[in-house]
Length: 126
Image 1 (spheres, rainbow, N blue to C red):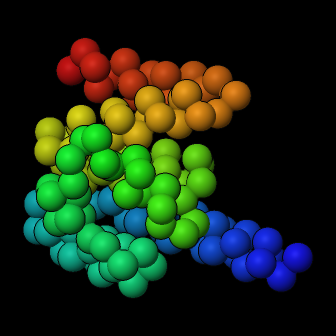
Image 2: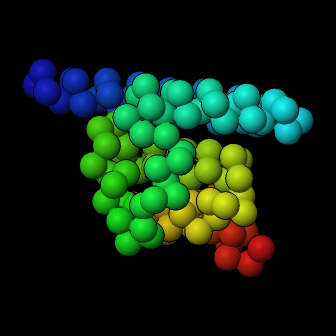
């Protein structure tokens, strides 16, 4: 029971951090503000998960989902939030990785999401 409570807290905490990062990215307009935000995002990811966005460049597409799902706190909802963050950070650079995450979440969940489906189509036909 204690371990379940701990995992639930970890998942909720990661979800909260990811939502805050996404909110900050959504409010950022200028490129100066974005570079500051990238630093904050990298700090928060490192603090919460032990990795930052730069490591994504070194992870192959074949290993991305395995890498993320091994990190404590990444449930399907948090994976989707992380993909949203990647798109807000740099759509061109992270489109392929975000698409891979969205497709994984689509396959792994029994619930269809019109919003997720729209994001997938938008990335596929950009």
